[in-house]
Image (cartoon, rainbow, N blue to C red; front, top):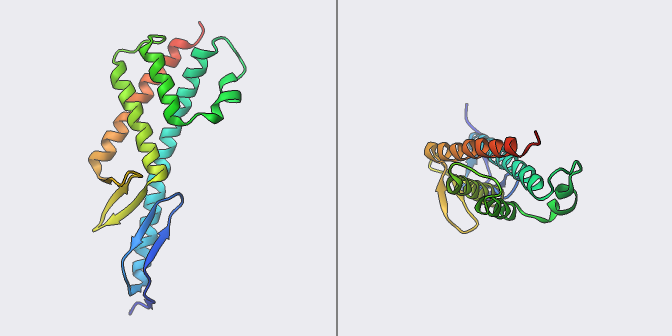
Length: 179
C-alpha cells in the first residue's frame, strides 16, 4: 500500500522538557512520523528514568543534610524552610562539605563525591539538554554544546554511579539513625 505523502516541513517535534528530534527536510511519509513518535517515546522514557533516579539521590541527600544539620528534630526543618531555595548542585556541595569535614564517614569518600557530582551533571544534562537521533543513534546535546552518544557504555556507567551512590547514601542514613 502506498504511503500518503505529508507536506514538506523543516522543524522540530517537541518532547516534554527541552528535548527534541530535529527533522531534516521532507517530504515525509506517515511511516516517517510513526518512527519519530517511537523515538519521542524512547526519549521521554529515558529522560524520565534518569531524572527520577537523580531525584531519588537528591532525596537521600536531603535526608542526610537534615539529619546532620538538625539532629534529633522530628519536624522537617530543612525541607520546610531551606529546601526550596537550594539547587541539586548546592546540596551536593553541602554533602561534600559534610564528608570532607568527617561529620560522617565513608570508605571511599572521593569516589562517592565524584559519583554524586556526575549524577548531578547527568540530571542537569537530561533536564535541560536536547536528546536527538542521528543515523539510528541517540545523542544528548548538553547546555555547554557537548554531544554525547547515549550508548550502552554511557548507561552502564550512569547506572553504576546511581547504584554506588544509593548504596553509600543508604549506609550513611543507617549510621545517622538514632539507636
